Image (cartoon, rainbow, N blue to C red):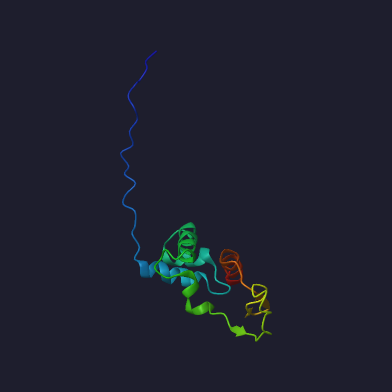
Amino acid sequence: MDTNFQPIISTNARGQYRQHPLEFKRALVALSLEPGASVARIAREHGVNANQVFSWRRMYQQGRLGVPALMRDDCLLPLMLAPTAPAPSNNCSDADGIIVLELGEVRVRIEGQPNTAILAQVLDRVLR
């Protein structure tokens, strides 16, 4: 019985990873965020993996592609400030104002002093 204790080393180098420019990533993300767009089709047309495009979309939403997620031009929300009755002087924390956000069929009404963390979560869900 002959035993070979030598490791098998593959000589096939995987190659260099492609480094895509930031503008290319942003352009593909913008295409993929259009209504009715197919991420798989966009990725195939541009020679990248669809998983990579989804990764860039996540980075974009987190603001890691140089464009903050809430500063996009294509998702400005109409804002209407409604006047309110003045709050009683002894209890001014009940109602400091009203914010009404309308986006299509979605309407969000925020009264009083909203918690910033909860407000950020609400806006994140509405903007998706």
